[in-house]
Image 1 (cartoon, rainbow, N blue to C red):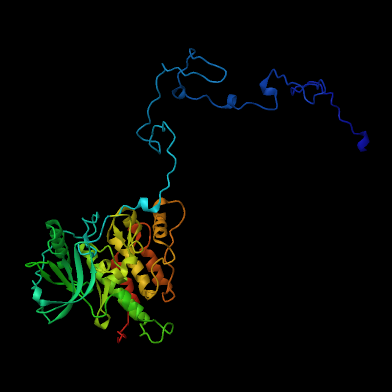
Image 2 (cartoon, rainbow, N blue to C red):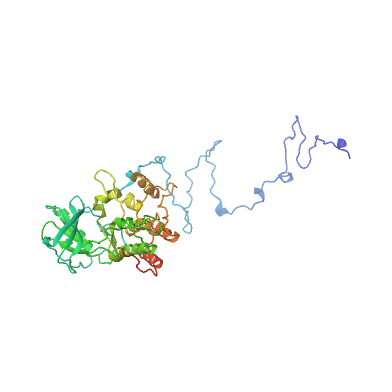
Amino acid sequence: MKMKDFHINVNLTAGAAGLSRARGGELYGRVALQDPAAGPYQEPHPLMPAPPDSLKGPTTTDTDDSVDYAVPDLSLTSPTPFPEAWRPPLPLTRPPSTLPPPAQHYAATQLCHASSIQGVTGCVIYATADEAGVSGAGPSGALPEPAVPEVAPHQVRVLEALGEGKFGTVTLCEVEGLEGGPRLAAMKSLRMGAAEGTKKDFRQEARVLARLHDPNIVRLVGVVTRAEPLALLLEYMVHGDLYQFLRRHRCGPEGAEELPELSYGALVYAALQVASGMTHLETLGVVHRDLAARNCLVGEALTIKISDFGMSRPLYSSDYYRLGEGRALLPIRWMAWESILHGRFSTKSDVWAFGVTLWEVFTLARRQPHADLSDDQVLENVSRCYLGDGVPMMTLPQPPLCPREMYDMMSACWRPAARQRPPFWEVLLFLRRKNLGYSLDYTG
């Protein structure tokens, strides 16, 4: 059959299927079906079984209907509450009556609520877990206070001033009459005529220091309490602080040839001793709050001991930031975000500071942490952990001397969630594994 012989007849007659003849030029006319079952489409509801009577709700003919809305009849019985076997996944809360307030953005300094950590002589004050606002950090209860030798003022010979605070000074001295003969000591002394409250704080500091007996923490070797000025005498080491010690050395072939060399093993050995001293503090539930290379002292045979008077020294004033007139003086480049923003100090905030100290060791203290950021930018950076705006906090870069697994340990110390940071005993085990087989090769 040829295509020209093919015609479509649009004059359809009504049939059983319910189709009607096209009228008025329309393609389709109205469909009139007497029997719904005869049409090409059938509504499904007649085919579904009727619901049981128990699921049918009450009916009423008294409701007022409109074209758009049906007004409910409030006289009806209220629906039954949720059965005990099932509760909605979210609590049923009343929707807010007003729109939420617009988001507020604060300057970093407005978010800071850290309190002062500086003692009466300008040094940092060690805190017990309770004083730092931490529970369960360690056995912070009272321990037997060991006897500390009383030293007469004439036994102390002042060598040089190290630093000062609002109510006292720190000086380098030689002390005679102690067990083992004359020795160097850092003397913290109050100013003459100090108030009773200041003296009370000073004695409390002495009680905390007297509890610390560890090969890697400076020891309280004597006190002056029977004459004024009151004074505490702490060990001092012949090579000074770790920051200056590192800067006087080089590691490997790079660096000034005239500087003595420190091996990679020696750097790990130094870091291991810092971790060992901090493990002791962790066990006692004592929080340092200012751990840094400037607060570690170096002695003979590369012995490292943790100290606490770096804050009092004008030499390190650029490492501390005052948050406002009369407010706290804080080492913000070493501090955990929760310490800066919420004033919470714990052994886990000390772990954060240890990570920065470890970074100082493997850079040989050649740069200040976050040296490319201003103090305000440092505050803004750590506030990323608090704001949760999707912008990650910038961490310190991997030092060239630092292997990847050592840098991974550093990075673990800077995890935003404090509970996810490693405890000091775990850090110590890691560094001991990395220091296996090391024999002291430092001859300086």
